[in-house]
Length: 68
Image 1 (cartoon, one colour):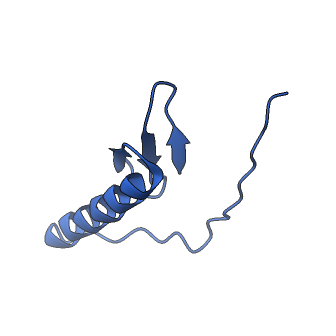
Image 2: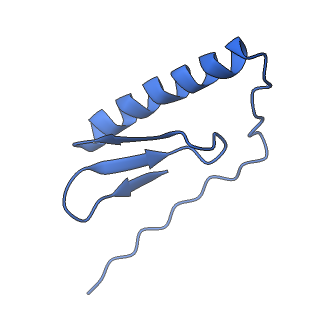
C-alpha cells in the first residue's frame, strides 16, 4: 500500500508481511525501496525456516478521492 505523507514523500506497507514498511522521497523510489524490503523480508523468513505468507486471496482495489 502506497501512502502519500502530509509533508513529503511516500510510505509503503505490505499488509501480508507484518512490519514490512519503507519510505521513498518519490513514488518511483518508494516502489524500489518496497521491492528491496520485500526481498529482504522473504529472505529472512526463509533463513529462519518460516513459511512464506500466501496472499493469493488478497483483493486489490484502489479509490482516489478528490476534494473540491
